[in-house]
Structure formats: C-alpha cells, structure tokens
Image 1 (cartoon, helix red, strand yellow):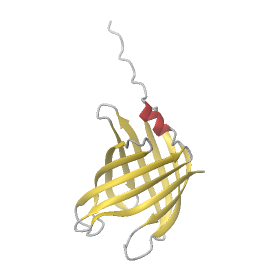
Image 2: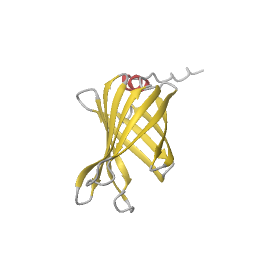
Image 3: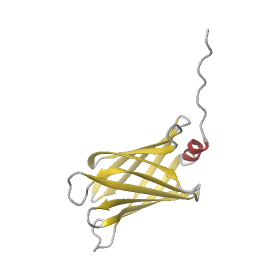
Image 4: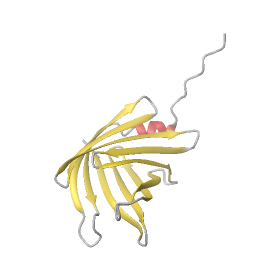
Length: 163
C-alpha cells in the first residue's frame, strides 16, 4: 500500500494574504474624465479565508447612484511563482484575471492582465493593479489602464482601513 500524498503547506506568500482577512472600510476615487475631479465613494469589504491558500473578498458600495457589489479571489501559485487575482462585479460582464509579483520593497504587489477598454467600450486593453501594504490595518490599491494613444492612465484608487 502506497503512502498518501502529503498535503501542500502554505508558503509565506499565502500567510501574507491571510493577514487581510477581516472587515475593511474603503474610500475610493474614480478618475472617469481626466479634465474633471475624481468621483468619490465609500464602501465596505469583508475578506474571508478559503482554507490556507486563498482569500475571498466581498465588496459593497454605491456607485453612480446604484448599488455596486464585487467579488475578488486571490491566491499565490507556487508552481508559477506569482500571485493571481480574479474580480467580478454587478456592473459589467467581464472576468478580470490578473497575475503578478511582489516588488523588491516587500510591500508593493503589482498584478497585470487584460481588462475592458472603458474609453471605447470595445475590446480589451492592458491593465495594472498595484497594492501598497502600509501595515496590517491599511493598504492602498490603484488600477491603471494602457489607453491607446494616451499611455498609462490611473482609473481608480481605493484606500482600505481595517474596520
């Protein structure tokens, strides 16, 4: 009789993600038109562990006068040596899939992938999400898009503080 396969052990990257489990207050700025001040909103996110390897976030707020809900999933893929994140929400029929690594500073996570072209409403363009972890109770996420003919533009910034 052969020995059963050993269960994988969480790595440091998984343990780092689990530090985000809990309730968060979120202050957001959305840069819809570069010639105008950003739209602002507040929301809440509840982050739960899914075992020792994944975290699932449930975000809720109001955006443009309507309820807005989103779900994120994030983990670390040891075989690829990168983090992976997905995002879906109540306002668009698109699944974001982003992958990336922690920067050398040890506190900035950079994920990249394709996302909707919000300028034209057609096709996809490269997106980049950065998250700077200021400590266990605060982090700042920013989303950028590579706009054709405009270069990289900041689309939003979300400041998370532990509730």
